[in-house]
Length: 140
Image (cartoon, one colour):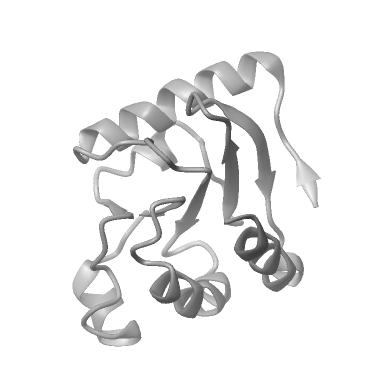
């Protein structure tokens, strides 16, 4: 796993994450993990993540953000009509995460403290994604 967090970076990522969340009228209350994935960057990663997202689509401890979305209709066709429905799923149609370089190509996992501050940020390679999802599941 690759850790990509510096003191200055953490402060900016916190503000970008909060901007993204508030633009969708959501809250980070009770959220321990934010899982950020781009629809068009790692199709394999989204395929692996789909079942995990569906399983935890109403778990208040995790927030899923899907960015660089080609179309939510395409997501529904590929993964099912209920795929993007959930209180803890954000479809970042404004591509705030991409614009602020919160994600490059691999999924990014943000671990948050009790004050909704990022404590750890991990860019997860496709080969390690299943292990990371298992770690997240244990944590939440």
